[in-house]
Image (cartoon, rainbow, N blue to C red):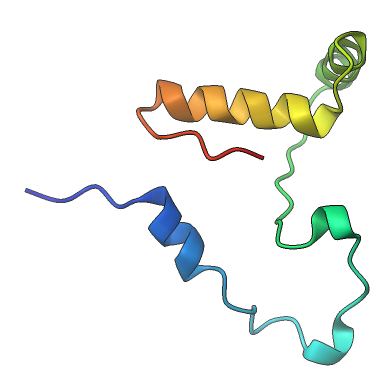
Length: 84
């Protein structure tokens, strides 16, 4: 019987500096982005507009709305939410 791998163990495995980015290529990082990784996707203009407008309507940033959606999806898949 195989054991389910923890998402956090996978995150910790990937936390080392990437061998594809030379130290001399590093640029200043905004404090709000330190210790975080980008997650991107390509969506229709209608989806983009709807997400931006709904987030704004509820006084949220798009990033916060996406974090809520991702955490809801993790719960749906039987995983623990991990926050922002």
